[in-house]
Structures are given as C-alpha cells and as structure tokens.
Image (tube, rainbow, N blue to C red; front, side, top):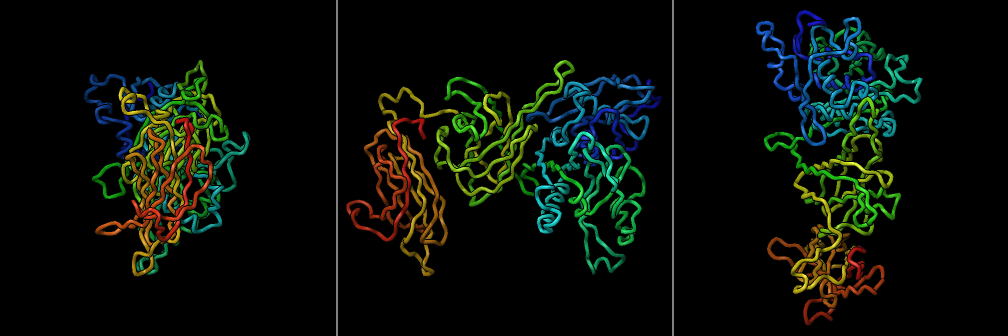
Length: 588
C-alpha cells in the first residue's frame, strides 16, 4: 500500500499485455511470462491458490503480506515464499511491472523467481528456454533457423510450421529471438522494427483464411501466420501484416476479430511464417509432454533418472570422462540402457544439469558444456560398455542448462552416455526419456557379473563373448512370393537372444548382437535362423561357434547346417557373423 491505495494481484484477469520489462536485462524472463499468461492451466500452477492470495479490501485483516509461487526445478515443483516488499525508485517499480499501477502479479512472480535464482542480478541475461521449463515442467527444444535453410526450402518450412502449430495447440509455450553478433548489436533496432538480441513471446500460431464472405470458404486459401509480443510493450514489426499494413484488407472482419487483431503500439504483432524465418534466427518450443492415458492426443511414456558426473582416480569408478573426443576416458561416464520395443519409435531425450546456486557474493553460476551420445548395443546387455559400439545419434554440446534431442530409433537396446564436454568436471543431472511404449530405462552400474555366495558352487564366468550377426543370404524360399520372414536366435549355456523378425526377404540384414558371460568356455555358441509363421515357426539352419578368445578372424561367413546328427548336411543359405571373446570380462 506504500505504492498504491488499492493493490491487486490481478486487474481484469491475467493477460500477456500486463507485462512490461523493467531495468534489469531479463527480456527472456518477461517473454516467458507473456507466454505463460496466455495459458490458464499453466499460470494457475505457478500461482497456486490465487483467489486466496488476492487482496480483499473487505477483509484487510486476512492479508499476511506474503505470497507463494511454484516453479519446476530439477524434476520437482518447488514452493517459493516471498514477502510483499518490492524494489522502487521514486515510488515506481524498478523491475517488471504491469500496465495497471495497482496490478502486481508479474512483479511478485519475478521476485519469487529472483529468490529461486539467488538475486535480481542473476536474472540479467538469462535463457528463455530455462524459464519456460521452470514454469511448466516441459521439455524445451531450441531450433536454429539459420542452419535449417528454412527461407528457401518451402517443404522444410511448412513442416516446421506444423510442428510449431502442434506445440501451440497442445498448450506448449514458444519464444523466439534474433541473434546479436556483437555487444553493440544487443537490443539494436532493425529497419523493420524488430530488435536484435531480444526475446519475444509467441502468443498465437494459426492458419489464417484469406478472402471475404462465402468466397473465403470456397477458395479456402490460408496463410501460415505467427503472432509475437515484445516484452517492452512497444516497438513492433513494421513490414507486411504489421498492425496498419494494407495486407489486412485480404482478411474478413470476422477473421480479424477471431485473431484478436488490434491496431495499437502494444508490442504485439503478426507476421507470415515465411517472414518470421527470414528475420528471426532462433525459436524455442517448450513441449508439454502428455503422459495422461485419458487424453485424446498421443500419450508418452516417461522415464526420469537422476545421475552425477563424479571424479575418481580408479578408471572403473570414475564417472567424469568427457565427450567422445577423449576416447581413453569417454566410457568412464554414467551409462543408461533403454529398449525400443516397436519396429521404429520416436524417442525424445532431455538432459538437464542441476543449476548452480547464484548469490551476490559468488556471482552468476556457470553451466557446464554438456551433451550425450546414443549407442546401439547387444539385446541382452546388463553391464557397462567397455568398448565403443555403433553410435546411432548424438546431441549438440552446449553450456546451456538442458540439452534436447528428438530421434527415430529401430527396435533394439540402446545405451545413452551423458557427458560433460571436457573430462574431470563434476555436477548433477536429470535424464528424461519419452517413448511410445515403456523403455525400461535404468542405469548400468556394474562392470561385470557380481561375485556371490553361489559363485563357488555354480562357477564364475571365465570368458565374455560378443556375437554380432550381420546378415544372411540365399535362405530357402518359404512362400509363393519367393520370400521368408526370418529371425535369429543366439544360444549359449542355457541363455538365448532373439532378434526382431525381418519381413519378406531371403537376404535379411539382421545387425543384431548378443553378449554372454561364459562359465564353460568349452561349450559352443549356436546361432539359428528361423522363419516366422502364424502357426508354427520353421527352422532354416544354424551354425556352431567355439568362441575361442584366440580366434581373431573379424567376419565369419558360414554355410547353414542342420540340427543334431544331421549337422554335416548343408542347408540353403549362408550367415555372416562377427565374434569377439576375451578372458578379461571388462574388455567388452
């Protein structure tokens, strides 16, 4: 009440137009707040019990002078409690403030976020992606528009628009900016009215119908458009489709009303998506990953694991090996195994490092440069990797709080290796994996099978063998079309690994591996090929391998043979396998 006589948390509801940036360089945070204000279900999570927290002039005695807000940090929602004292100069708010002098929700959210970050100073020059994640618990995906050739490649641009539209329609938050290439470029205004080195909130994405009356329905011409807001609450785009441009004559009055079109210098403006890709260099999509089974939209299965990079002089205990450039230590990082159980699945992976606490004394906390690689491994691997295997995907390495990757993976087992860029750095991280079906993701902590009280009686493995079945050729035709549906089974000492079925081929590319810790090295390894049928599967042939560690031949191409006593009889087809065996169990 020292600032105004009639303080309110909200005046006429909450809107992205409420916010104006103050004297700290946190346009990134204000842009994120603008996006948040347009999503009722999201801001009610950040501002819980908002009706109870509102000032009630009829019950002044119930006002306690404190507020609480919630932010998502490192896998959990944190409650942040603050008092109602706000920094002012000449009785004016210094930092984020509202259009209405007596509305304080944005100033209070900013104060709570500053407390979480250490101080107001820590909000200077932050990252919009971090704020969007902290408001939602979502996953942020930054896209560099300069690298994707979106200006000239119309098909690629249309695909990006559909993805941005989908994120917007499903309740996600979006922000964008134009890179500043030098300090002088920061917040420099371009001739088109846009500002460099400055975060904008995306407040709407839609296909706009052109034309008037019935003609607009029959002609059905639509334009991909995007609406943004400058956190300053002024300075807008002045090119095509800006507030006063003649292009708006192509749109009917009802369509303009539906779009919420206004002619005011309020910092909000529309652009075509083509112009957007021409001028803006970065866009951040914060997806709200849907894990509810009650939803009509795609439901994801989420696995969340906490881990840490820790240093040790013992190579088997060190968990801070740096990126793949450091080949001697790369595999000394944390390793996480997961399964893709469909023929092909879209996989979303996010790694977030724990924010370093910032205070006035310590200065701003610096992020480590982090990233991760994904390797395809044996279908039955349960212990840590000790030799490099096929890399199928990798993220960028960047010193941001989180790194995201979307990739398509074929059925099989994979290992994610999150790393810092340089070895020896320590820190905690949160790994989140989203798949269509449960991935059974878990950390690999053991280097080899453990010694137990049964090891003396039942024996302990003497040799480790990795069998890589590459392909087969010339298999027996099984149907009228001259094809087969083959799969591989690898057997060793009572254990077996089965590959996915390859459809309609007599020359399948299997590319499947099995790993066996062998107590009886004298017993053979058997690789069989079967044909998948509806009623009963049919045996197509097998090969028998010794798995001798001294056998160093890289690839064996062997003729398929029959089972049992008829083993000497050759069957149609050959199989190519690679075999790697070692007496040292931590060599594979």
